[in-house]
Image (cartoon, rainbow, N blue to C red; front, side, top):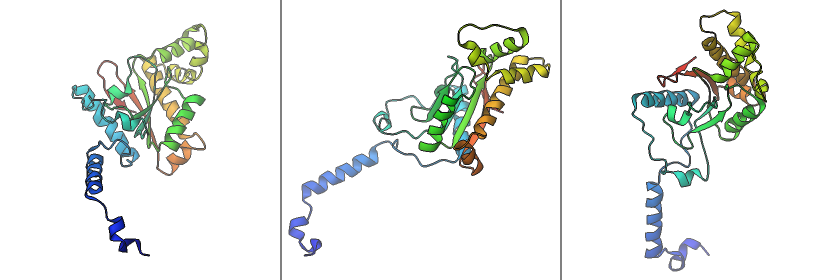
Length: 232
């Protein structure tokens, strides 16, 4: 027997139609936090650039973090991943005027790439489909300054700090070899470039995504005094 023919049995009641209509209206009224349309790497970068401009101007758009909190508990779809320093003065969500769920942030003093950080970024790219990674260094970086002093002055650091400095040492050596007026600033830039280069060459996930243009990896420098982020 045709189901459509049995209209008496299967015709929706006024109550069910009303409830269905209310459910549809409620769904349409909910903020679209569950899944935003996919963005390209360049579009993701522009969102960061515009957010930083708002931050500098004191015109933040993201203020109510309660909106969409329940939806974010179910899933996350960050449009950018940020590898940055553990420095307390560097807060990516503030610097780029973004809210919860927008950025996938990996932090380590000196913003260098280690295996744990690399694996975290691979997770964001492979499973969350994040199209952009930014390596964000900053002015007056204490970790890079320590690396410069270790190379130049033979500074001996306590505890596990020497292990942390080793990945930054090549940037310090490169900077000091150039005899710049500001060795720290030069080393900070070199350290950012080194991290970008390692990420771009990281097999098997990141390098492949970079090669097919599904992922872009950029370096940037955050000025603590002005709040400005400059792309390198």
